[in-house]
Length: 239
Image (cartoon, rainbow, N blue to C red):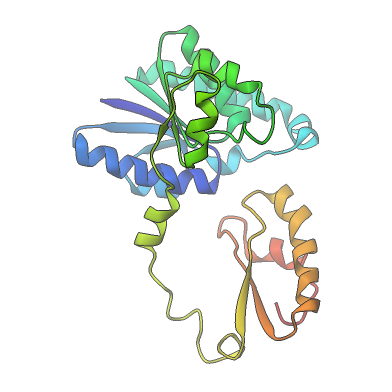
């Protein structure tokens, strides 16, 4: 079978890569193409646009990059029609993916959604759109299945994909090398995967270091964003 997969951020890329590998264990001839990142590519997918080109969040950032967003949507729609997949797998990223789902439904292409948008926390009315456009919803939290049931939509609970990520995790022995990291207990700061998100969240997180002098704070960063971008928001000698 041919699958088109759309993951618009780093976490989606990670979780989609595990999904691709799992599908391949069931169908070794399955082929994958789509929007995503390095992990999906390593899993065997043909990536036609990297999530770095898709990661816009918030009303103003989307508005400022509206032409790029519309071009990405147009490119994706055209590429899907050219590829002619048996099904499209959407991974979270609702602002983009729900628009694609509507387009696909109008053309009779099967839509599978993996990792539900958090409609139970905001815009629950979007469930109506999901019911119209999504053939099957695969959720990762048990209560999400119950939430969709209240809307008369049968979602399937498949477990949280972080369990797969933890299973494959290999500790980097060079992370703690006898320097100051080895002297204190560590608190990790996780500011997100998008530049605007990091710009807004990291300065607030860094302020917490003043309240925990006995701990070493480290920042979880993404290689494609680069350390200099993170450093401009870190004004603390012990981070």
